[in-house]
Length: 123
Image (cartoon, rainbow, N blue to C red):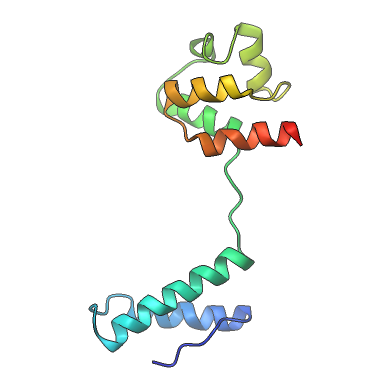
């Protein structure tokens, strides 16, 4: 096993290719150990150099609405009145903590995704 830190994109690509070769190696073998270590190193590099932005809260709400066939009017009482629902979904008003709690409970949405909108509003 000759594993070293990833310092650039070329080394990253090489590490990905090597991991692809040994990905199915059995645990407790030299190749299995190498795959496990490579995975950790690759994840670390990706977290630093290829971070994934959090999902957009309003798009997440709209996606859940689509998945569950929920109409805008169905959010009345969860987000607020008819006009407040429209304002939030059209990005004219931001989510409040109460709205976030109710959306989390009613639509089973992760609080972490919804809080992003609230945090942007308070900064």
